[in-house]
Image 1 (cartoon, chains in turn yellow, red):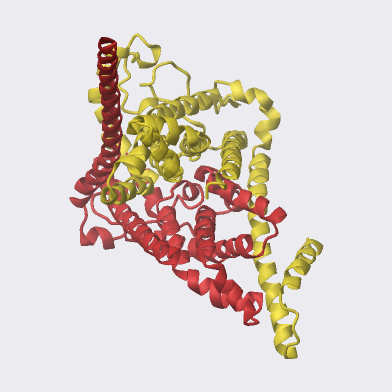
Image 2 (image 1 turned 180 degrees about the vertical axis):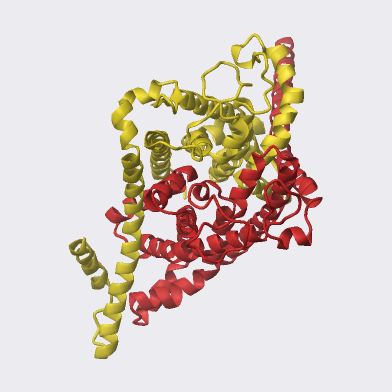
Length: 335
Length: 294
């Protein structure tokens, strides 16, 4: 590592002016340059090291469960402390369903908001509404979860579930089983996640839409397109890759949210069709089980869940970064 | 010939009208979506303000935590604890974050720049519960819970945010300033410490304020490592420290209506702090960008 630093150092020092200076100052300058460089290099390497350490530590802590259950942990459906059998399938299912609800609701909303902010709203409204939408992202998840469990959940139970069961009940997802009132449910968790995802996707997409070259948009208008046709033909289609990246980043947020979901989802560990039943996600399971975790195997199983979450999280993030980087390669021409 | 023309234009009229209607509809939907988002924000803030304000009082803010299953009590230990936790986290993440940003923007060669940048980007997307269990297994498992571990967890949340905002400001510092300093014979470290950092100080502080706003509300990094605490104000970060997010979480799960009221009031205190901090940060960000952009 030191050799690497020195090799880098030479490239730095050669750029500094090689003028005869007063000896002491020159020495001090070279020393200062070197120290500052090493300091920043060290901090940067620590950042890389931290990511590696996190992955290694979580895998190591999950080792006991990894060696006992192996890959079959992924489709095991029981979580029984007494029999020492643990499986991740219900948590994976819950994660899948809640994220799907969140993305289905958030995607059109976020795109519409981004379009409103970039194309439609007058300048003064743009600034105000834009910062309000970003403020939505600043609400701590535990506060949103508190609102979810005490306000949104009961509201959905009293007004939403009955209506959806009646009109959409022929779809198994919306068919509330007996005894399910939906106040703590996969559905409410999905709604809360949607509220978290919308501001993220909206603010990224707004930046994307604003950066679409205005010549292209004006050309579309000049050809007689309406504003919507311009948006569809130029704005949306030229920022497709960026929208995909924004959605993946939003999905990453939804996947990893633990606290608010744990508050509203009701911590039930089984797989069922109805969205109005209780459930659990990978992240919320970790939160809801940590206190009761007594056996080493149970703790290791929770770390196994964390490892799965970490892998999914890293893959989604890498995908988004990959798209962003490729997108910027194309986008740099416009700037 | 004339008849055909008029028929065509008639058809064209119809099509134009349809296109106009579709356009109007799209505009309407976009506006409704924006109103909906602002509405949800208003709904949440209003609910917290309404339910929290009735419980909030000076004694509530300055008393020790309530004895379980009895009325009264307050949240002074939570406020002090949260402040200390976030303070230590800031002290850890600010210098490291600025250093990484300096490395990325001023020093790094391209082949070292991209893995570091990737690490920072991945850290931004890291679920906070992962940070929580990581710190738990690294520092707490087998030992006692302590506030310092929680601060380190919060520092991991803040680090990529501070790095990114610092990077953005560093990019806005005009190259002429760097070149001017070099032309005057200044060495690299003098240029960085004397020219570049001072002129981007405002932006760095703004980014830090935004990161603090984010960290103050984080629960998952604290839950496992400083989640079981006493009733009184504590100043020693080597013990478990009371803090607002974890206590809101615990109270929100409680069936006792008194606890739920306390949860609302604490949520109001936290929300007011977070919203003010993020608002101040955002306004400062806009003005500093405008200033440097010119």
